[in-house]
Length: 90
Image (cartoon, rainbow, N blue to C red; front, side):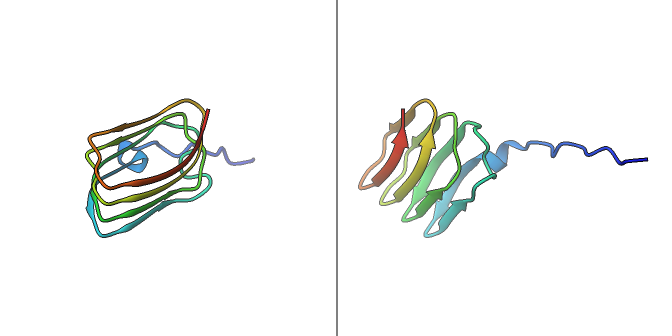
């Protein structure tokens, strides 16, 4: 008898980067799979999102570089200072 595969349970913390300083944060292809992604309170970080997302929210970040690949919907950037953003979105 063949075994039944169970879906991996989604955890909210897997779809956000929050309260980090001086880190390189990466999501590889297959890590997000088109789900919304939230980024908040990053300082002196580099962020790589190498997977597709539905939408991305970036709030209260300073001196952080973002490299974000394809977003189906929108990207929201609020209250950020001295950040660089490279993004592909519709």
